[in-house]
Image 1: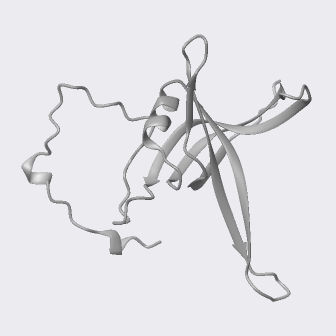
Image 2 (image 1 turned 90 degrees about the horizontal axis):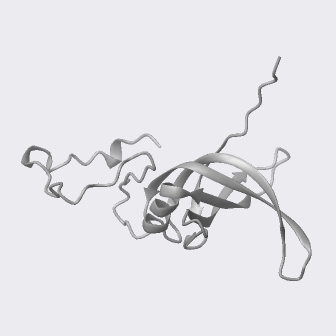
Length: 154
């Protein structure tokens, strides 16, 4: 009988640096970037509000890597989903090192840092890219969307 296990990570945070998109010798895309998440709390014994920031190394492969490299920029707020992975590597000084990173299989761009309207734009890895022959114009009946930003409860 096998024992089940789970290795799943979900984060919402802001990019700490622009993504680094590169290609392996076999031409597989790999994109790495950092995300910062923060947590605030008030100590139970009273006192001032505390805050702690955590930094996470993120890695995407293949088509998702290309999408991350094109869409993401430092400061963007994103949702990522994936798994923890620890790997060994040798530094330039010859020392053995370990790093733990999050290998993602899903990413959604929540809001661009340059987007002052506060609206959300979808950047899911599960959406397919637009073909060149598709019409960029929106149908007339949906060209004006109702602004519901003030109705969002959070």
